[in-house]
Amino acid sequence: MEKKVSNPCGSSPRTRLSRASRRQRPKGGESAIPHLSPASIVFLGVFFATVAGVVAWLITYGGVSPQERARREIEKPIGPLPTGEPPPIAAAGRVIYERNCMSCHGSRLSGGIAPSLRARRYDSSRWTDQDLANVIYAGSGSMPAFKNTLSGGEIVAVVSYIRWEQGLPLPEGVRNLPPESITP
Image (cartoon, rainbow, N blue to C red; front, side):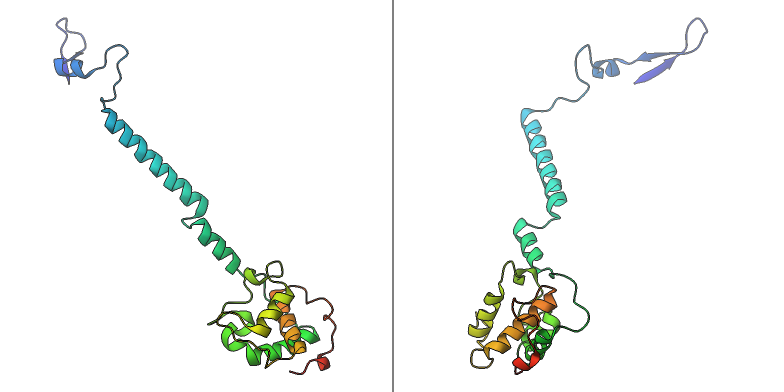
């Protein structure tokens, strides 16, 4: 504590430190920081390292695990919805899709009780046209088989429609196939 004392000579007041404040003042090379026990220092180090780790994780992953981030990435749409009329084979496939697939996979492949076929997980780098055709033909998991319902040409038309809706190239060799060759 500081006490103001007047100068006996009558000049400006001078400041004198009390004994208590002189004791608290560091001497020479001593630190002004209070002394902490080694356990307190370790605790503070661990605490600040944990806080820094959580902040870094939130910045890097946005609070989402890498597995969840990867799952969300493959669920994103492949691209924007196509505009205009599809090629003839895909137009025929749309009719077949609407009759047989839309109740589960949704309008324009948007998903419903079955997954969205516009998701990146179904793009041509992960699922070939043949893979899609095989699943449509034989079924998989809760998806029924259409081997007794659709002809091979109708399955090709549905795959063409799926690829057109995904904004991807149509299967090789069917791009200009006339719709008369498919019986929806």
